[in-house]
Length: 132
Image 1 (cartoon, rainbow, N blue to C red):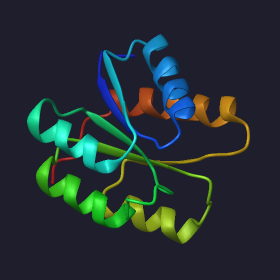
Image 2 (image 1 turned 90 degrees about the vertical axis):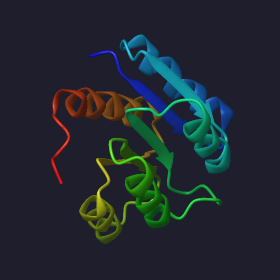
Image 3 (image 1 turned 180 degrees about the horizontal axis):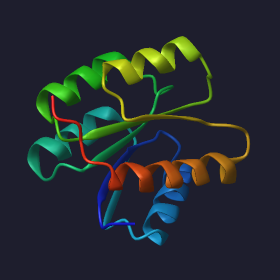
């Protein structure tokens, strides 16, 4: 995978570190895990902006649509990937239409959805960002 940077917003440290481990083993240049949206946004405003932002849609401090809108307005080059254990087709479709780059269903089998995340991220890295 092309060298890229990824920020992860994940309230569960073990899950965030698992994703980070797998991304780093697939040649991702930089991976940082944040426990909440506020810390991630602070880092993005003060230090660096990633190419990808992976967000757990079920985080209590995140409304997916508000987050997506804020990221697209402030950091238009950041590509947002949502994770969720809820497979609501209308929600997924709406998030993609609003500008999300991907939506990964978090099944009970972490190896499955983490593998799908890696595969989809590799694809997105190769695809140019659409011109708006």
